[in-house]
Image 1 (cartoon, rainbow, N blue to C red):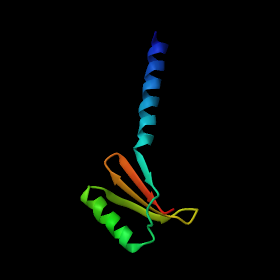
Image 2: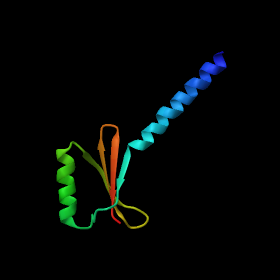
Image 3: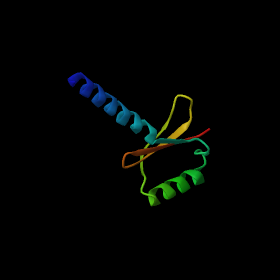
Length: 79
């Protein structure tokens, strides 16, 4: 009986940990090299309560901007 309880607890934890991965939203339809697009994105995100956490170039030389709001993360990258 104890093993069954531990097994159900393990599946429950696995399910909740797996749900956290769905909080990441990736949008790659923007030209972040355009300064006007970046400014609009920053202004709109700030008005909605998103905080800019990181800006970097990834391995494919794409500009990436990462925003956080609570437990959610939005990642914007160039095409």
